[in-house]
Structures are given as structure tokens and as C-alpha cells.
Image (cartoon, rainbow, N blue to C red; front, top):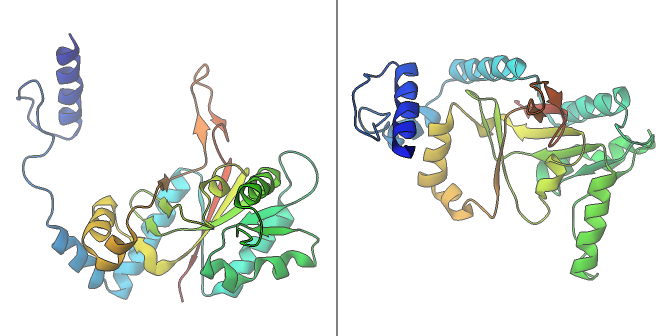
Length: 253
């Protein structure tokens, strides 16, 4: 019975992809090998400014379809302006005090979030462990800071245009919870991290020496939209398992 259901499901997928209906109990979804990864890398390396702009436009369109905001700015200062405006225009989902938590990341350091929001009375916690204190107590402290923040700010290792997906590696100082617990997630990334599709992403992860050296880390997170679910009576609810609002800020000089 299980094989029959599996066959039926895969045949429906084949039909949706326009594939022939014939096949055994486990029909292949692909007629041949996937694209050569070297060809994908070549397309990335040889992409012209016009092609990069087309990718940005595709990203915006895909993100708009899933209610994810995208801002393209020229430098870190402009990215800071977008973030400050968001902080001033939004209110916490719980409580009344605004608090922000951000990754310990060079790109975010360049923005200077703490200084930027100081005059607005909004404290910013950077997820950096104090090496002079007990590691366990420091982790508890950062956990409390993340839980009390209503905006979490991260960067991204990659941004996938075709699916409007942000790809985040978890590292020391790059807590996954920053993108998951606060009700608003802001991701700041360099436009050079933009890839066309998942195939290009996988090719870079597997075949580019600098990416292979970093590896996948303990957790590689894919974020394509604000959190939502329709599990209960098919009623769509935003923010059920994560942020209810996601804003991507791309720096494209």
C-alpha cells in the first residue's frame, strides 16, 4: 500500500512537471544529470551588471509574492537609515520597550547599530560572548537578550533570487535564535552574495574553495518569508513559528 501511494504521489509530481507518466514504483523526476556545476559557477563569475540587476528585480518580485520586504541601498550608512526608520515606525508585539539584538558580524559593525539607535533610546545587544565571564552564564545572558528583543538583525551568507531565500550559517556570535525569536527579522547582506537559484548555491557551497573551507556549520538555515501557518481550520496566521515580518536589506554599491 505504501509503495502504491508513493508511486501515485511521484506520478502526480511528474505530471505537474510535464514528464511522461510511465515509470516503475519509484519513477525518476529527472530525465538526465543535473546541470554541470562548473557551468553554474561560470554563469555566476561571468554575470554582467545588467544580469545582476535582472536578478535583483527577480528577487524583489519573488519576495513581494511572499510578503517579504526588500530594500536595495548603496552603502552601510543607507542600510542603517532603513533599519532606524523601521525601528521608529514599528512597535513591539509584547510589552512597550523597544529592544534590538544583532549578530556580531563585520557588516553590521560597519553600520554601527548601537550608536545609530542610541539617541532614540533603543538599546542594541550584540551577540558576542564575553570571554572573561563564565561561558554558560554568558549563553544564558544572550538568550535573555534575544527573548526580550522585538527586532533581530542578522546577515546572510547567500541570498537566492529565484526563491527569495536568505541562507544563514550559524557560528559563534551568529545565533540562529536572532532570526527566529524576535517578531521582526532584518537581514543585511552584500549584493555580491546574491545567487540565481538553489543549483548555483549548491555549486558554490560544494565546489568553491573558500566556501568548502567554511563548510555548512552546525546549522544552515533557509528563510524565504515571514513565518506563517494555516494548520488550524485553514486560517492563515502570521508569526506562528517565527517572525511575522521579514526585511532584507541588500547593499549594492
